[in-house]
Length: 131
Image (cartoon, rainbow, N blue to C red; front, top):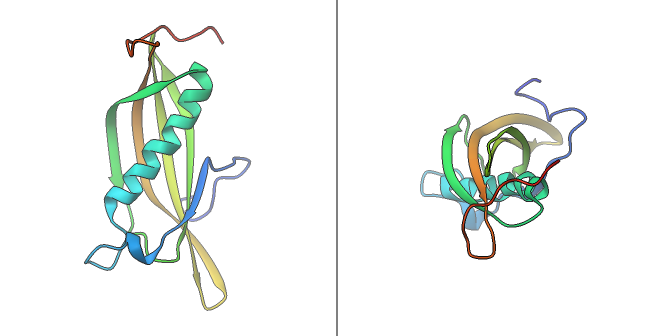
């Protein structure tokens, strides 16, 4: 997969436009805004696999590769990378579609790996259900 095009044959779990209110003083989108969407995007395949609630246990890696700007259309792709007894690791890739003078370019802007833990009704870790 290229870092200058959206992944083929995959659907993003989240797509959202970057807005003026999300901008930092440096002129790009605040990193915390991107991090929050990465966490939400990562939780979606985890929730589907666990078939119940999960909590974010760890952000194992997080790399801001390129800046995101106002009016970029941000797409988050997430897939389970591995499983433990009570947890799943999810890889999240974030792409920005940038429109300028009628031309759209696409770049990978962020990549992260997060760990989610399945929890029971008492908020204690529970075993993953059989597939």
